[in-house]
Picture 1 (cartoon, helix red, strand yellow):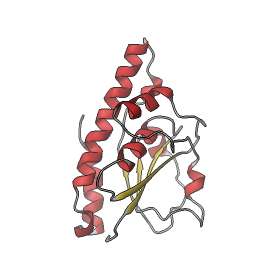
Picture 2 (cartoon, one colour):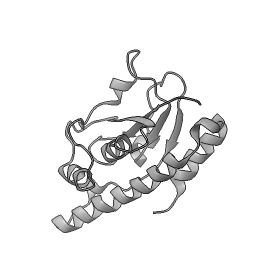
Picture 3 (spheres, helix red, strand yellow):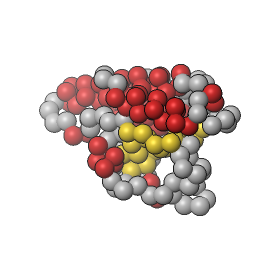
Picture 4 (tube, helix red, strand yellow):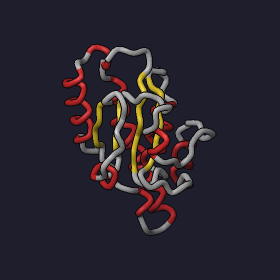
Length: 166
């Protein structure tokens, strides 16, 4: 895989929190090595306010973020994806659309912060924790010498990143 930039799609069920945070953080990375997108199998149609709060708190832009269906990325006119990464257990178990070009796929499971019940402080803490976990895995992903790894070795590394405990 040798490109100047790689397209990465983060998938989740609702596309309102985890996949949106991953999209924003990797898009804002200084390296400029990735064009990132996110989508959901059953999008909620809105980005969770606490996800937006986390993204804004770490200085990432909010203006392009929206909840969208993965159907937008399965058509012939969609960008070719190099990587498709699921970030929640529900999306990992669902049958995904056919992704042209056979992108590398991986599952990086994160707890759903939007499912946390409790005080506002407890909900914010859950979003902050997941945001840190996503950032840790993205930092490792960005450090991979993608252009130097064969596809099978790269797939093993993506899977390994998904097993790293927070």
